[in-house]
Length: 339
Image (cartoon, rainbow, N blue to C red; front, top):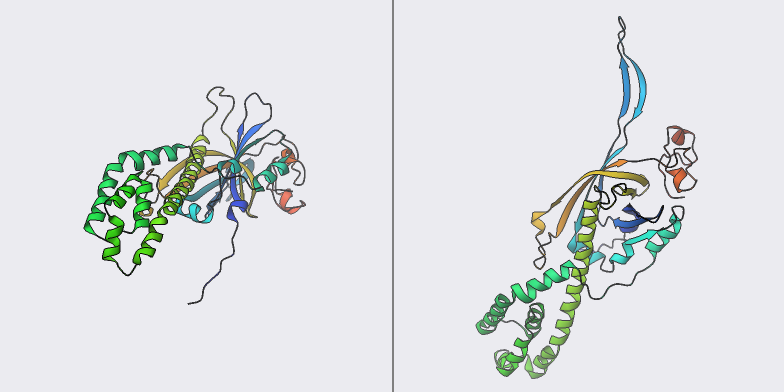
């Protein structure tokens, strides 16, 4: 079998949702939250024209008057998968995807900020860390202690490194010192003489590294979980207003997905969140390992209610475009795009 090398598709940089929340007391400013798609997103598009139909006497066909069209509807379906993000994007963090901008016309500056590397938070302190730690170091601690002791007594072959990792997970490092006092290492030498004293000593010395590796893995997992939960809550907030001042409505959501959807301004009319039961759960936090999200977006083109200028400023590009933008325009597109 030959190995196959896959070139990175760089999906998070090329397909995403940008949420723009109006910022109270700051004029035209707004908070921005970027939610990239880490897996393929399914987009179903529809748009409906409105006609007035006339049925004349003795005429075998109708006459029509064009009354306009409804907004374009975009139904999105995508996944947020914890194992995939952990494996392929371990360097992501909240600071990279959350910001706000003061100048509506300075989109390039905002885009550049998201492309610059951000410093990763080393020790998380969010809900995932608190709930996960409560489970491993409180709720499940007595059960874990019993399991470790049973494995030791039954002689099932648990190694020093494996035991160190279990002890670190459930805050039971004291059991390692107890094992030394009880002759656990000596017992391993007796039952597995082929290992020799030197190798058993090396294994015992590696317990510290196993503990450190476990803590680093847990911190990374909790950080990714907190980010997934944050994005989930951003989706939930996309259909509500600012409760302290209701004139500030839900966010504008801009969809970018390759060449087919270029910075489309939308509102979210409804969403649904499900999960893949077969993917299981993260045992520490009970987060489903794969969330399945559906969003119904409707295009909202306002701008300054003037002419659509495909290579103009951000406001001019958001103006409503007709068929002339495709047939006669410079870009042959009605999308605002990035220029």
